[in-house]
Image (cartoon, rainbow over all chains, first blue to last red):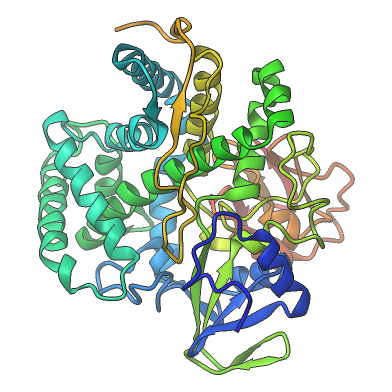
Length: 402
Length: 72
């Protein structure tokens, strides 16, 4: 067994332990029939080899999804290829670029509410838990009155995705699917009435191929969690990294506009929100010198891969001096045919959040003595809270008031 | 066969560059066809692999046209 087992061990800074394990062997058995891959090269080889390493058979501990819910990240080609072709234009770079003014507006509203409440605030609850979810709701054209209910269901979905036993969540998930199915049917009845992503999905057609109703419902369910959970982890992790590296924080504050892009990428490399994902062998294969029979699972540990010294100089150092035009891409958006389609939206949201927080909240910093705790979940790198304080008055909005 | 890169969809993911670095290069966040490409000496299989590998569907290969490249 490795020094650090991502299934059982919950550590704030696992990288030295991962480095120890990686230096001994690129692969370790972490459970019966399950290994972890710890090198950048090993992870990317598995990630890109979808012919052997299946996503359909399960990417998280919840295992294989039911038929009808095997979409995108939970599907293999050729179904994945068909679904992705029909879905990809709805998240095009141009469409995401057009959302930036709205992202800024939502962020400014959030800061205004923090200002109105005064005092310290939990960045996780007051910012990270709000902005990404609100933008996904906007993208999907969700009515205001349905949003808090949806938020509750996505929290249940998050808990279900990280649980070995699905039974406690079954009824809530059924209700959630029923709600989404009704939404999809409303859009199908009149796709021209709304200009939103659901309408795009129900009317997408290429070479007479369309998305099934169950596929659209499952894509929405996936977006509502993947589009929010990842970004909220990413922004909180990035801020904790900055706040615990005073020299880098000073560098950032001296040139926020010049460094925010680097901050986004380095935050995602240093401590991305997804600790790793599972794949299952569809045929007998190998992990390095280790035979992997059909059914063997491997946990692609991104937290290890993005700290691989074979690829990154001083990988355990959080540095805003890295040149991301030259630096090897991190793994937070994946690689290969399953590359994250939400990447452009995520980057815009992270840029806006990380710039606006430090521009509008003077002397923003962690509350003295505060130490967050990592949540004990195999797939996620996420803190349970992030208590912060600033000195007033709050800076002006960066978008028009409304 | 003509190769077209749709910059409206390209997000600079680099799958194309990985599959066929002699033809594709990512610069400034977008993929481009190299200017020094010898279109008389192209590996069609590798172009098709790059097309399939692009997660954004940004590469289109048109079999009905002579071998050449463009990006928009």
